[in-house]
Length: 591
Image (cartoon, rainbow, N blue to C red; front, top):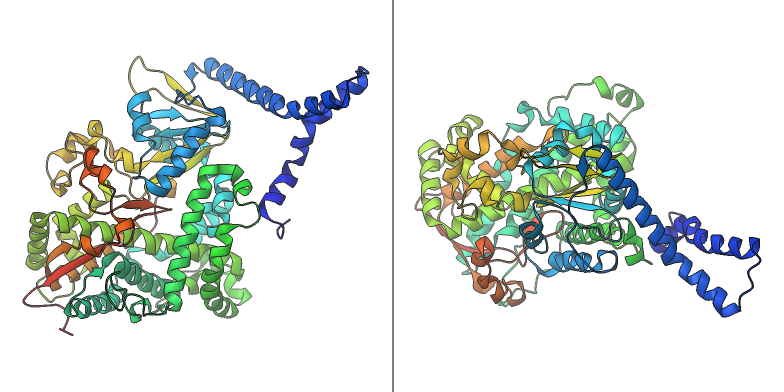
């Protein structure tokens, strides 16, 4: 069925369920010799579908409530959506994804119902939570009771295949075992790759500022992380920094540049992620909304055109002896990650899936963090001055930072962590409950929650990181000192699961330290070269600016100068256009 449209494939798979209700009605009519006019029979067959669905839903609710009661627990409270199948809740989530602020559609529900709710979308349990104790259960203490699940893996398949972020069980363990050796301290502490591409990026910025135009910093660091990631993965970067940077919309040259191959790759990859994010809102019913065309797969054509020649060349060099020895083989000196992977398998689909998964982790999440660090520095010049002073004191104006330098730069790490808290690169994540599970009560006198089998659990790190009861009354303020002063002991030390930018437990991000190093390295080089950062809101296209209505909201949303959006990762809609003032002495030669 692989070549059939998604909707046709889905309906074919559902055919037994679709035929069962009218089949029961037909059998009853036959057995009891019921004589009805044709029109009455047609109505009876038509009504059999909603009646059958109602019986099924009510029966499963009864079974789940009875099981919960036996375990001394209750089902998480429902949101109170009166619409059929929770359609209003679904539409609210879709609207929030397309035009809203991250967390819109959820934050009001959490404040009204509690931090764990059952939204019941399309007649299926969808548990939303921002409770760190329950995230700890999902990700660590009850890890074996939860999984990505077949529905989420199906949602992601067109984009990520069976890679490490979109697989469970043995396949997940296989991908994890392939990549783990490559993220040792030794491999991630050599900064030559970062240095070359940071140098290229800074030269491009200087040249554009000399022309009198702002720079889309989000685009720039997307190129920096793409080149760094592809050199780390393949041993050869895609040279996205060799293409011209975009001009602001009002510049005469804004439409003059043709799209490079790497630009096409990055654009198509971003669009594919957006289609996938929308697909997850429909869960297992997504083929009905992409009936004739798999929209993500269509976007991936340009991505595959870019990747497949690289993968084919690497796979051709892998011998069967290498693959047989892969599981016990040490990472070799000068070996790229792709060189290492082809010693495990020559299956191009497996290789492509893993590269795509690591591409999301290695490019998008790091670029998102750098984007929002610079956004925050543009809004907090006092933080910028203090951070720059630490950099110049520890590293100097021209020296290349080292691994040991980063260990001593506590304020740099605090700035990164505070950005990750307010703007986590992956603001929303999900799991599925395998066979039913119990989340123990949070407080004395409270109730345990029973999570039904196959229920989908969606957790919002974005909203959890902004909870005042977890982080203090200043939770919506950008304050890196919260990671340095007594607030660490007060809030974080005793409850580490309130801060989860890299996930936790067995599926914690393998590239966490790699990301910290890459972000830190680029920020050091950036602030060695530039002394001031200013957000240029005039360069932001009008349709990409925050709506005026946001100013009437509370918390961080009211202060935003850019429109936050999310696909699989967080980004600034329309880019992040900035101006900078160069320092008197630069780590990069003047262009």
